[in-house]
Length: 69
Image 1 (tube, helix red, strand yellow):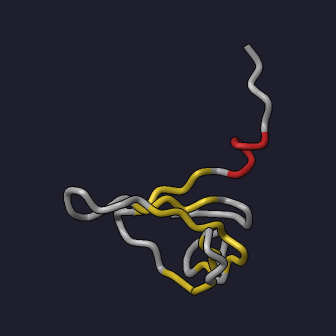
Image 2 (tube, one colour; image 1 turned 30 degrees about the vertical axis):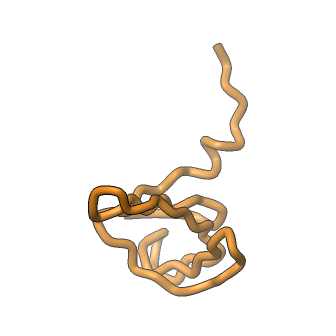
C-alpha cells in the first residue's frame, strides 16, 4: 500500500453490518509512501496506523482533478 498526504483511507467493516469509516493521511512515516501513516478521522482524532487488508486508499489527486469528458 502507498499513500500520500491528503489521501483518504477508507476502512470497510470486517463483519456484516459494521460501519465503514474514513481517515485523511496527515503524515507519511514510512519510506516512499509506505505505512505507517499518521491519520486524522472526521471527529478530529489523530493516530498512527498500519492499515490492514480492509483498507483502501482514495487518491487525493484524483479527487481534486476535474473530469474531462
